[in-house]
Structure formats: structure tokens, C-alpha cells
Length: 180
Image (tube, rainbow, N blue to C red; front, side, top):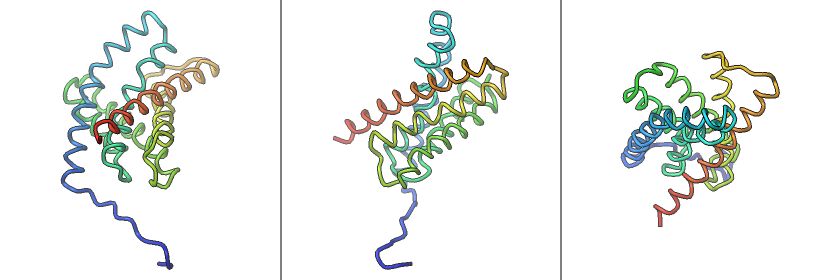
């Protein structure tokens, strides 16, 4: 190890694990309730409006966990564990919930990794929220054949990403207020 560099510990404490567990339950409940919101909004605002207004709620486990725990891997764990809780509450999604949770959590994790896990502020959180929209729309296409024209797919990714960004920022600000 060179002079001036130090190895950062990624050990999770009992408090970190408890925060992840609470985040998973809260996120799982939000994910489950969001299905109703999505279908109601889609009926009135179409697929773009529904993605813009609701998809970010399905990504909220990652920024919520990362803003609380502030350790590498916390975004992935928050999103993935929330998806598992969603499956326990409303099992109709089955294994696809876990697939979405893992992919969205991993994409969100990239938002923090870009900043080398040194910042948990609004910018990495917003990026993490936006990035979760990419695998969400891709998995919709792969798993459920929800496919549109290239232009429509681009709009869906942008709408899902913006929704993720908005709800990630809200989650980050909520955690900041809790810390005060």
C-alpha cells in the first residue's frame, strides 16, 4: 500500500443491517402498493406518464438504503431485499421481482461507484436513481415483451430514469431530515 492511501472498510455493523432490514420492509410495502398507482395512472396518462410518475417508487429502496447506510453495496442490498419483501407480500411477480430488484439495485450502485463511494449527496443519488430506469425498461422488454418503437423505448427509459431521479432525491432529502 502506498503512502497516503488507506484501505476502506466495508464492514456492516448491526445497526447497518437493522437499517437495511427496515428499508427492505418499507420498500417492499411501497413496491407492492405501487402496482395499483401504476395501473390507475397508466389508464389516464398512458405508458410514458405512468413510468414518469410511478417507476421511481420501484427504485426507491436503493437510494433510501444508500443514504442511510452509506457503504458500498447498500444500494444493491436495499433494492434487492425490498424486492424480496414485495414477493412475500404479493407473490404474483414471483422470481421476476428479485431479478428486477437485483438489476435495478446494481444499476443504482453504479451511481455511487462513479463517485468512488466518497459522496452520498444529491448528485450521486440522482444519478443512481436515473440509472435504475435503464434495466427496468430493458427487463420489461425481455421478460414481458413490452416493446415499442425505438423512439418509444427511448421515451420510456427517459421517463423511468427521471422518475427514479426524482424519487431518489426525495429519499435522500428525507434521510437528511431524519439525521438532523
